[in-house]
Image (cartoon, rainbow, N blue to C red; front, side, top):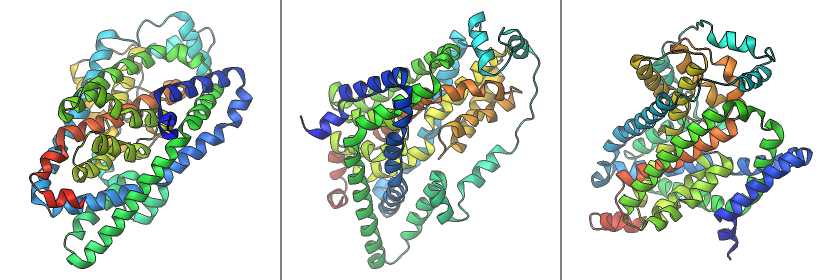
Length: 433
């Protein structure tokens, strides 16, 4: 078997993760010592993210802006962005409302919660605190803060800090401005961006060979550091979040299957690379080259529009975080015995959309801390339960990343025509790509 196919084979990845879990359980010292391997791998992927993002967006935006036949697809992006995120939030809220996983916790679970938040081990104090009236200062002006967070006052600072959202805004504006530059000088710059884009894509392909090693080390370190006790308290939330994620993934695969015109097996196989890369790295931006390969090379969608939508969706199509914020807020309200009405659910959805946009470029604990934005609007203190969400964050982050990656590919499938159809409309542009 070819080395690349072996490294990205589902059996290889699953076996690597299982071996990592076993190492974390039975040899935690060794597992912690191997953490640097996973860190190096993730850093190597992050290394190519921003140059890949900038070059892909500048080239794609410029071509879209100068081609009236393709610019029409951009108008549909905004509608699909909001509709997709709202749908994910509604499904998550609906599941939490029907099954109520945060209610009726047994005594042993409350005792575990008490130990984790350094409360009374009998669980009595925790129970009293969870049922007491709580108050919190609401955060105002989130929409204004979101717009301020999008504008880079210093693009070099945004690049050094790895701020994906600000970098994306700069690349979009720069690509549009480049359309007014003289054709001869502008084309030379665009060719340079194209070279950078292809080189970053090749680097990411090479890094796939190391995916099993990274999967093993990251899984081993996670189990060695967190153990299994937090899962006892959060198992219902993990199950709920996993079930809803799986439901939405099925919808994404169905969209890709229907729009690509291929067989179901081919559609599923095309997403293996992005899927397992998302599981291993939990970094959606690192999956962008693999996502483009899946949609363009394997399924035949138009390269021009795909290369714009993938980085654009990675920054703005925050399906995973929006779903997470909705479900986490409802779970906390159930944990605290807070009854919610229809307006509360609507407020949760609206606030989760804002928090989702503002979470662009964030990961890990910083991402889940944005749940405070939503909870504060309902007067719910997220801080007491933060330790639980932090403990299971690697699992939830995996769900969020996988959903984000496949939902972006579904977005591409909804908007982007197949290259064979597009070639009939503008063959010169298609051949040039």
